[in-house]
Length: 120
Image (cartoon, rainbow, N blue to C red; front, side, top):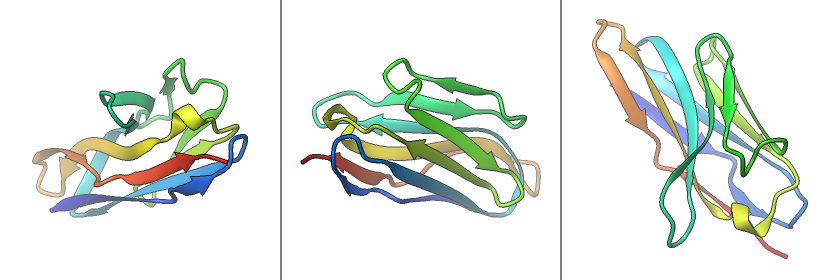
């Protein structure tokens, strides 16, 4: 079994920063892509940042230049540094990862999410 657990959300003022973390734990052989999604109230989920196993990254236009995704392969963790936060960044943020279990079965998993609220 593998699970993803996010942390680091909270309430922040506009212009502030937060760092989200997502830890993958369990019987992992390897992880391919690790991604951050968010879902704002009344809106569909959107992919905002992705990073593959060799560190190549992709960002949604809405966060480009403000958010930075990174990963620590040794710890099976992915991070999202969020700077210059705006009220429209308020959402439930959750991570997604795919890879292989130690018995080489494939997995794609989602975390439960961490809430980010940007408000004065």
